[in-house]
Image (cartoon, rainbow, N blue to C red; front, side):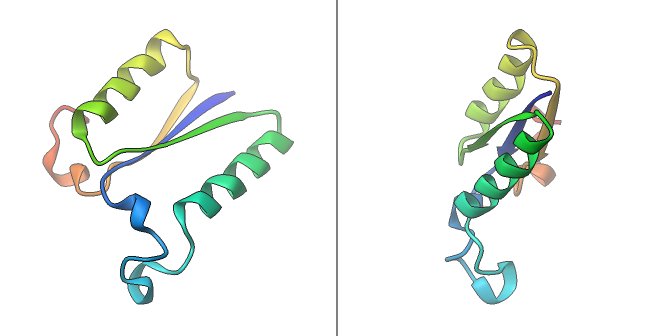
Amino acid sequence: MNIYVINGPNINLLGTREPEIYGKETLESISKKCIEIASKDGHDVTFMQSNYEGEIVDWIQNAITKKVDAIIINAAAYTHTSIAIH
């Protein structure tokens, strides 16, 4: 499977922004772990993060033309505010 993992605003600050609440693990370390685990099962994972709603919408739409099998999305603040991502 070809999988996109798309992360929304401020997720790039994991590990540094309020680590007592969000933990000390960074998005980079989470990305590496997910890619490693998925590759053992023959899956290709592409991690993305943007603070810009339009860029996230573009990635979702591009997944169709690139024949991505699955999207895992943590839209962060856009979970509550973005009609376009929904």
